[in-house]
Image (cartoon, rainbow, N blue to C red; front, side):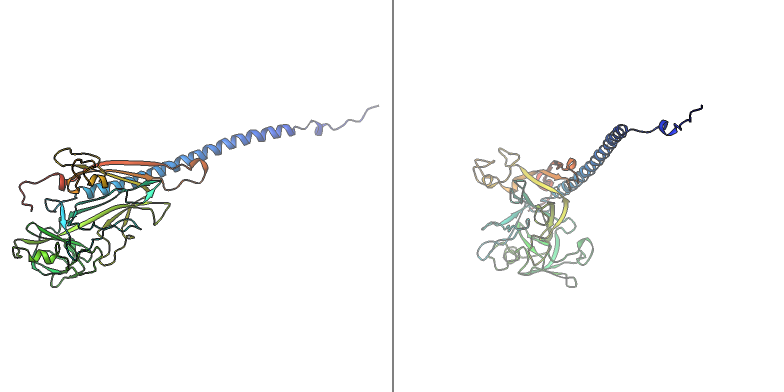
Length: 371
């Protein structure tokens, strides 16, 4: 008798056991994890490359701008590389630009401002390190030794020639002017301009407190009274720029910036919130100076309080700002962001260093008359 046959297709059908499925999933997870890790590392590396490039570009642009300005320091100024300011009886201290929260002025009794005004450690403290501040003076070669047709106690009239209304010779309130007669100078700040009469006015209440007509010496009144009498041959006016560099860690605490400020930035209202950010995420600015004093000629002088006495780098004499011939710059930049994952939470830093010879102070034209 024939036995019935069973359909064996179901029992012989192929498939995966649970163990096989788990092993396959494990292998797939390892491969996928390695792939994603590689992609994450690649993205992190790309992010770090971009941040490094941005950091270097920002730091380099800031350093390049400082170098460009330093090359002009002292140009067009008297041979002593300083300009007289109001002094003596009735004079008050002149204001100087600085970082937010500071209140810099000239020292009591100062007779002039130097072409290089060094303020070591006077900037904001970042990562526990006090940063430096530097102000510098230079003449504007487009408005140099311009002839005057009249000089009063608080104003001057520009002789025919430069167009003070427009173009490179344009004069506007807030600009600084050096008025010279022979070896005498005074530094004033423009408060009003009349382009019709070509008159520049230096009224009281200017933002830097330079226009002190009541001071006994160093002002336009004293220059007018000094012999010889004013004339087109011996009295002229030059536009001067006071450029200040410092770090601002107040406006954005997380992203300190290098600020470049021309004069004060406002003709009547003094404010240390003015200025232009020229480099972002700059966390250190260190400056030192090479001195030419005819004897020891010390280098890398910080111009700290001790250096301005007889116990500092120029001992047994005091260092003087008008002896500065070179400036050594160290500018440190940092990446802007720390990234979005733990692997990229690294602070990238780079320090650019440069040494600049102050052409207007280091080189002298013996054949040019310079009072």
